[in-house]
Image (cartoon, rainbow, N blue to C red; front, side, top):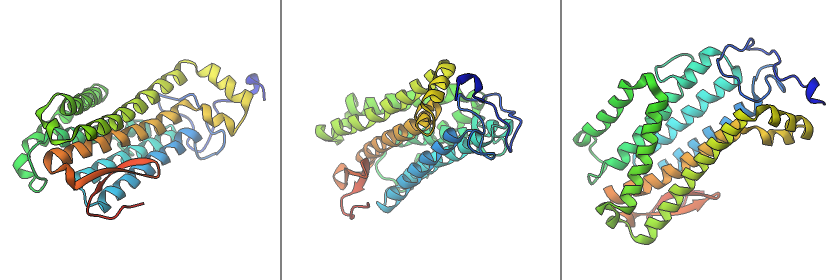
Length: 286
């Protein structure tokens, strides 16, 4: 197939495209019912990884707030799945706007997930039992989300950088770091650094996909499918940010458990190539 004969914008079940964004992937190339196949299906990885993490966390008897954080990421994946499958304006608003737009709101769970992680890291009071005693912190954080909901991109960036800054401060500069042995501080730092690196790599690939779309499309046509699926940059953004979020979440969980409880009750292990926090007195979950 030549580049001149390749058709990027076919009609499908949800046509016409009414979203203000239409990514580099060809529309309705493989299915009459799915606008962007790779961008849609890559969200199944996000959803599956988040649900897997939630199950592991629950099976280990870890605090409910950790399970909720993973479930919020699964909701993000579901909202993105709907947007890329349909490319409708309504689905785009659900994917982007933190104001409950139909049919689904996925940016709101993403913002709340990072907010929840901040609460987990800033709440250094011993014990997880009584949320009422520490209600001021989550109330302030979620109120911040609500007040600045009109600018969700700025809010998300502020929350994400604050999250990274907080865990760096705890591990490297705070007296709280004395609650974690230096060997474990190094391990947690590597896990969190891996997550941040994967997130940044995904962001880079996504932007390269946007800037060099015509060139990359030409490469896709030359190599042909299914190999060309490997050149779908936005799909890699979904996969890499899902992995990055997972790694950063695990790092934050262990730090929170060490600060609010006792690091000796928990250990960092790997299952299926991924790290997770295991309760010492429970059997490993595979």
